Amino acid sequence: MMPTHLTPIHPGKVLQDELQEIEVSIDTLAKHIEISPTMIHEVCDGKRNITALLAMKLSRALGASPQFWLNLQNNWELSQVQDSDYAHINSIGA
Image (tube, rainbow, N blue to C red; front, side, top):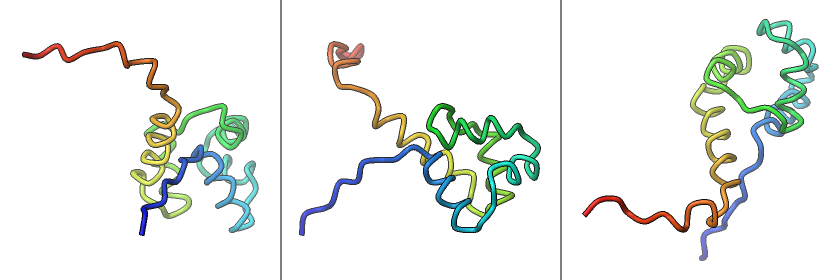
């Protein structure tokens, strides 16, 4: 069986889905973790990244590990890099 390649999704989409599932509004989460609702809206809209501090706060509030949120972010960022952005770089070592 061939492995299935899954295209990473922005962690904000995962956050948005999680909030819908537990029926918590963005504003309620923002107040609970002491950040601006605008920041959470921007994350959910894919306009802002999840930082280490935000990952820690989400972990405390929602139960997933900080690594979960940071791995989502890292996988998303790597999926957005084009080969042409670095293909011309060769090894510097011998």
